[in-house]
Length: 160
Image (cartoon, rainbow, N blue to C red):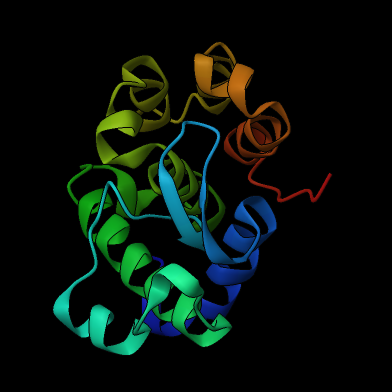
């Protein structure tokens, strides 16, 4: 199973590939206030410890601060994903696929992919991949969705 402390660099590289890094606050494609490596400020306000570390974030944050936020966001996603009964039984690439979707869409958003998750539960990864691509998610972020769907179907990461 993916572990934040063991796999953070690997996870951070992949998520940053999809999200990019911005040191100043910006509005994401959904109009949500975001900073760093895809940290949605509106979905998860800063903890007190994060506020102390970030300082005056409205004028920008350091890369290290962005990585701290990312580490915390990944930890939250992994905790949520542990509630999916078959998650721990998936190979690491398919676990990452669900983590990436959870990170981008939120846990509630991921859970709306009922058919996809059911297919994954039973190891029907080709069908799960098709469900992933037959979605608003795939229309809104097509390149990312194609990569994630490929991960679900084949268990192989492609950076195209």
